Length: 255
Image (cartoon, rainbow, N blue to C red; front, side, top):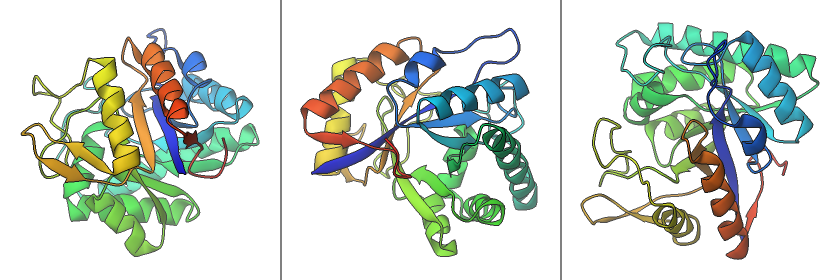
């Protein structure tokens, strides 16, 4: 019996600038990582995305990132652990306000982009994020790259953690994601991406870019909501997982 969460990064529109097909993707995923206004999103988009997720019974999570709207939070910013702690608390609290208004309970926190990747390997950054989550709401589940420093930091504080794997990204031999600046960072072939996910969930293994096999745990699978083919991809992935006998359920118990 296999059970896994299927999440997507949503709420990334900003003002008149529209990104993704959030309403349709929310019909297919079990958890939503909602941008909190720093790397993407704004107060109106946050409010609407929380409302839709709550109505569809999808687990709601804060998706805090670096203050980098121009770079979509994908540029590394050198700053202090205290600064990271404060802006993560700020973004979690902002989204939680909309959750309270819509009588929805926040389920998790998943850092975005460069912040997520840096926390995967940097102990001081991962600890700052974990402490921000714990001090904001210790019942929240912390999402981190499978086997990463972020997952370790969360467990050390006593947080519930979820090991995340990526459906459409390639992996390095050390278990980190291939940088988006590399030509082979993304998997564009749907069948290849789906096959990678099945192997991650059922065998707990993945083939890295150099051909080596790495072991990982898949508690939650990310599909990117900002990709043009996101809707078709998540439909294919959900159908295949179900056909393979995998139960889709939010890490917080909903689904």
